[in-house]
Amino acid sequence: MGNAEARGNGADREEMKALRAVRKETIRRVSARVKEQKKIIASISGRLKKGPGTVPEIAEAVGLPPGEVLWWIASLKKYGVVVEGEKQGAYFTYRLTD
Image (cartoon, rainbow, N blue to C red; front, side, top):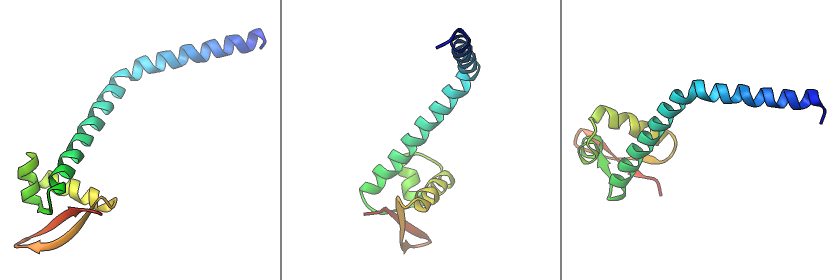
C-alpha cells in the first residue's frame, strides 16, 4: 500500500469517527425506541399466547390505550403474526398465527 492510500484510509477512519460522534445521540434514541417496540410486541404476543382476545381485552392486559393496541394489532396482522377471528360482541378477536 502506498503512502497516498495509507493517508486516505486514515482520513476515512477519522471521518467515520467524527460522523459517529455527531450521530451518537440519534443512534441512542433510535436504539431505545426499537427496544421499547420489541417490548410492546412481546407483551401483546404474550397475552395472545394465553388465547384469543379483543383489542380492549389486550389493552387492559398489557396496560396500553386501546387505540395504540389497535395500531399494533393492525401492524402484526399485516405481517402475518396475528389473524382476525370471530366477532365477540362489538369487537373482533385476534390470535397468534399457528
